[in-house]
Length: 302
Image (tube, rainbow, N blue to C red; front, side, top):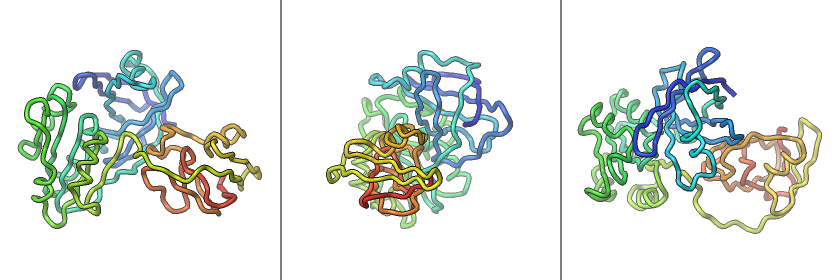
């Protein structure tokens, strides 16, 4: 973990605060637009937030947090109890939502989904690409950075406050895209579903707040052979690989426990994982919080 201290906390929209996390010991790890970090909160919870500042600013990370009324303890703690001056350990950034090179981009953000999109838009414009943003929210007052983005980028940014002027027509937006354009979308599930229906799958990159509900075959037991430690851990049906390893004294870092953050990534040396995550594990990797095994055993680099 990297050591930071909370430099500033400022409101940026209704129920949204932005945190500036200042480095304690030299430059922070570099990152690219689309990356997120884990915040190790003082109430023993770990939560993931997209970096929304400037990647060139190596002495400070910036995140924005909406107060979720159904909070499981993370956003509520940030809003009610964190104060400037508080030390806060953070992870090295991870990026499962990278910005790929393209001559044209359409960015679509819903509410707090603007956080990974904000630095993407900046990088795209600085690269000389044709880039526009469709930013959707209930009202302008609820949309973080809306005024700032319009002031900086003018008519490249279109604000859709749904209580005033409805939602954007994604089909019309799709029809206006050039042949090499990519679409980057982050927001609530209904908006992502509408985007997936309108934009070609090969051109749409989306990041979700929650995993898509999917069905898998019933869990089966398997053995996790930990090559470096010489231990074999039995993983019963109904118990996650993450929990089995932790209970056996082989702790694995974790965050969301839903297969969307990537913090519990482990290396598979042999065997056939059953990938149940939402972000697409790279070859030779799996996410222990949700994924299981299709073979009787997995050999892990643990």
